[in-house]
Length: 304
Length: 109
Image (cartoon, rainbow over all chains, first blue to last red):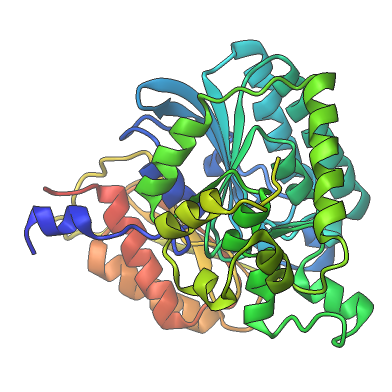
């Protein structure tokens, strides 16, 4: 294989670990980690449950450069306890956001992959999520853009989905999923008749990247390719949307319009049909660029 | 959980030792059937220490065998290896150790 061939091979974001994503997203060798694995700041709670800890508690945080501009970065590792937010995990994310308020980097990238609060750590995890939200909103109020990147195997659910929606922009791939309650949680609580979490087509057309992009929940849809995420993240940090009353009221108006147009739909396919998409099969078969083109041509698509 | 520690004394055969290019390396993830391996430089009188925290009890002899193979392959000097294991099979442990140690020594190219 020649080097030209290698450069055209996709580098899957989905399959990479948090560390590999950071290394491939930022400028080469620019990443400097804070509270790295050698410091062994591990969860104080997991030992009580006799389960293994991780040296970084499932989240990698630090600073680096993206196209030469200084950014702070957070990457959750979905493989460790589903990317769940424990006390240490959450404190590391909050720390980065608070430091960004002082150091004022060009922007902050949140590579989110999480099922939400780590149930073993209960209240400590819940408090951690509220601290992350508080620090994130303070940062946005100060005009520092924060972009969420979602494309990992574990999706982005629970508290971290709220965090994602408080960012300036969400960059997502088709494989990415975002929702407040995950499919298995809905099935457990409301029954399999309400939501069958093993029906993968249902799961993806409800919480999957293409569906979220069509609805306007995600601002950018990219292929499952780290360089594509990198380019979209770089562009997303250029758009700093003020966190003020005027924009909040506009967002609420858009949500009201959306509820009015799609509120009685029972399935994403009905929503797509009202947007003007003729065949829902079309959505599944189009690649990212084609879907973006289709979305922008739909006269009845109501998005923020 | 089971905590295990293994000390391998300094090897007299220095022909295969490669100096480390990095202070430390972490590879792998603590997910089911997987493990994370942290390799660090440490002052151990030329020896190698391996510290294992595993969710599966009673496999000390298997760990000893897999780690002895690793030490025989690379002859690590003044190296500490720390492992958080979530039930990885011996073959997976062996591959992760190779991956970690090769990263630790850096790209030869």
